[in-house]
Image 1 (cartoon, rainbow, N blue to C red):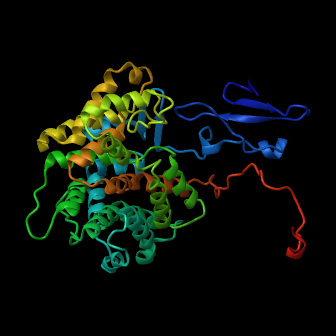
Image 2 (image 1 turned 45 degrees about the horizontal axis):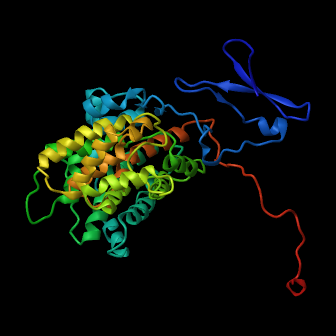
Image 3 (image 1 turned 90 degrees about the horizontal axis):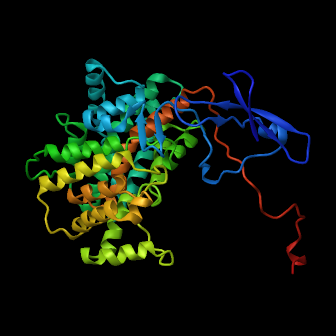
Length: 439
């Protein structure tokens, strides 16, 4: 493979098939940021070969203007804005507008957007009864996946994906209603009455209210905890073409309705390798048991033959540091200070693990710094949110990213139905043999 250029503005890549005189010239595409990408769409037609990329780690499946990640430099941008600035200076509803519309809103646009989200938080009353079909011990992610998919049956007036207005209404409904569904899934699992959303609260405040309030006494919002939840939502709102987002796009490429597409994303997020990382952090700490056992655990982590997994450190995409982690670290300490939590074994171990990771050369040399999942799990634990709800909260945050990616897909005329190819390694062509003649 060699790079050539037919004019400075149009670089190309030439691919030659060894042992033949066949070659093809492929356009080399460039985005606003990031590496160049070879357009291989005519590779099979010209040379009769496919590319092989398990996990799509080196394949761009789409062109997107929403999120950019530079894993080596530790950069995460939403629509060009650094995540650090958005987390510190913005809030979730403003970030949701940015992801959906491409630009930050002015004051009147933001007020109108917040109003539209707020007044879509109620669920169709018949959906209350839908929850009764689940066992009381059902995992909240199972309930969330099922109820979000069922929204298409209750809000079938906006299922024409080719109508811009219907796409807009569907976006508002998903962003507004998923927190209500998530909170009700939690309430159902613990046998408490559902709390209806309140229009006088912010997005994060309302979510915490529906999670924690009970009819028997007044609910008082804690601004420190509400701000922490808002930051968690902002930091998890989108993350480029990850497994669940790719799932939403693949489902969307078939023309499926947005509720079905987001339900598919929730199902993909449910996998422990994707959405369950912060839950895995607390499981790891629980298995360590107590702070004095940490040195032995670290020794096992360093021992290649021990196969001991270190959760919450490092990241598949971020090869240096996770830009979201510092924000979560600061937020974590704010929450712990606000709640005055002391002598909590899991949190004590987490802080000790953090100290070791920032000082031990084994971690530092390998750039195994605490990531966003490490700190978010500690925050949610401190706030009294059970671990089986962690992935549900992730889904609440990521819904706006999924909807933005789905909307971009539908509005992109270059998109086609997703259809990956394969290397077939099964049996060659063979003839059917009647059962009576088989050995």
